[in-house]
Length: 184
Image 1 (cartoon, rainbow, N blue to C red):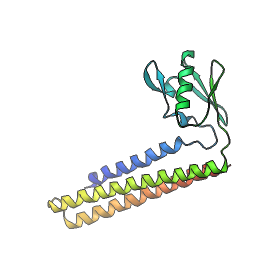
Image 2: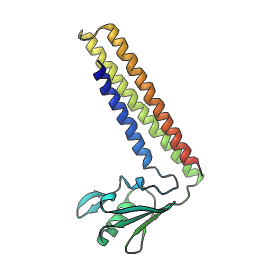
Image 3: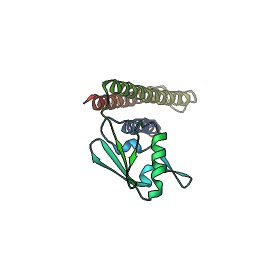
Image 4: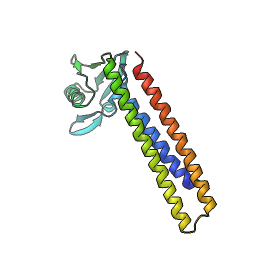
């Protein structure tokens, strides 16, 4: 039974990890190369991640610099950035592309915090769905006489403890990211 619970715990861990990755792409007024993670560049007809087409650096707190491996990629990289939901217009000097991040307005910060909370709620719903699936699986095993009534209660208790643990983790992540966004 432990290995069966471990399967559901792994799913909950993956949900939290996915949320952390999503939070990494939210920009907080400071330059963070992770905002480029989901942007794909058309590299000779093949969608390629930004990290594979150039060197990405942060020379200043509010600037990301992208130095393409090939000069011919500058237009494709700019096009990919403009097509993304990043909301920043790239500038280039023929060799490197610069993304300057403006200070976030109070209104924009509040909108980002709302978005963060919404994503957190989505992750909590996913965790609860995993709990429901686990409980249903254990109830089916009980009906098929594969596990006893006591085993069922124990499994449900363990799954509930895991659910509480990961929901608390999500709340902490949401609070931390919200504080980061609201800090001027």
